[in-house]
Length: 352
Image: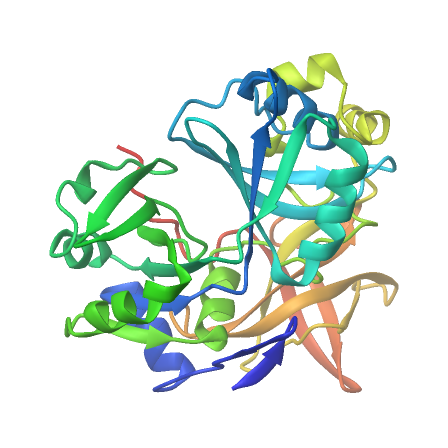
């Protein structure tokens, strides 16, 4: 167990590598109840459409056209174009639901409260917990408990019942695999987890596997690849900014972000592969072949699926081309490496 954002979380159960492989080949169960779950609810005669319009002031993502029962990955941005947090937004009949990073929930709430309409009630759902079932067998596993779960498409949600328990289930996750996330009453989370673990295809997984899986999938982690001094364009997340939002330019930090979209950023997030078996860890400085410092590693470790060290970081734009040779300073030792196209392991989301 390790301390994380005010919670005690499991680093591993059976071992990081076995949990990682179980998620890639069968199904891994993750307790992600530390994530902040927040509902934005219209008050008085203020409609849900107005809530979505108001929320768009602080996110470049297109929210007002989000279909009912759909989810969208997006970013909160500040006036300088930096990322306040990355989050998942889902639309329900009568509210928007946000899933926030645990370490950023308090900051996000303060930021949202300062900028959203006073006609929106912000409800922190401490009565809810969240479980993630990830992996190629996740649909088969959940189909044993929830009828019609297979009909959910990627980034779609629905309400399902397990006996007397109402579960808000979406086809989503942060491992690069097909998977589902279950928002359930906190009082029932243990019972549901135990039922899932009765299936031999499901292995409990901790933070270690969660990190190695998202790293192989080339997915950002707040406080590593994302922070308030990093823009969506630098982070390679310009795809989260739909064309309508670019045209309207009505979100926080639009001038900086749209300027970078037009002229290009000075630095870019890239994948980095070691050319030896020595892992390159967070904080390692990157040098060019001419011995100039050109970047830094933000996440790094061993990729069990790749069977080699993998990392992500930021480099000067002129050194961001795939195949560019670099040198990483790992505790005073030079480790040859090269810029690698992300993701390291192809995504296997069920988009059909």
